[in-house]
Amino acid sequence: QVQLMESGGGSVQAGGSLRLSCVVSGDTYANLCMAWFRQAPGKEREGVAATYRRGGSTYYANSVAGRFTISQDNAKNTVYLQMNSLEPEDTAMYYCAADPTTHPGDRDYAYAYWGQGTQVTVSS
Image (tube, one colour):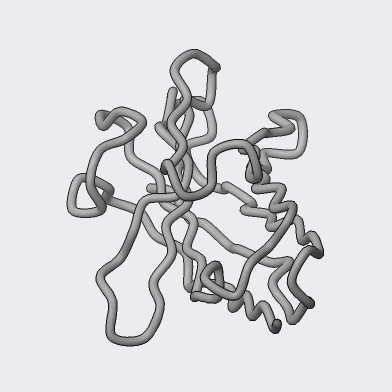
């Protein structure tokens, strides 16, 4: 089994930056596909970024490409989402997700493990 815990959310003005962290515990030896999703009130959950834990393919949503970067520190079993040039439209609950068989870019229903989420609020 895999457990995920997000942190790093908060409130920031437009143009600012935040770094989200997702600590992975449990079966850390698996080549998990790691992903970040977000969901704003009244909207469906949206894939933001994803990558394999062992490296390889990387996915970014068109709306965040060039502004967000997914990375990881395997020694700390942690996946990061660096968010720069934040916009009010980025305001959402951000979730860390993992799955042993899915691939970067797959929809949310393909992921078996989820964190509780961390809120990001961007003011104009």
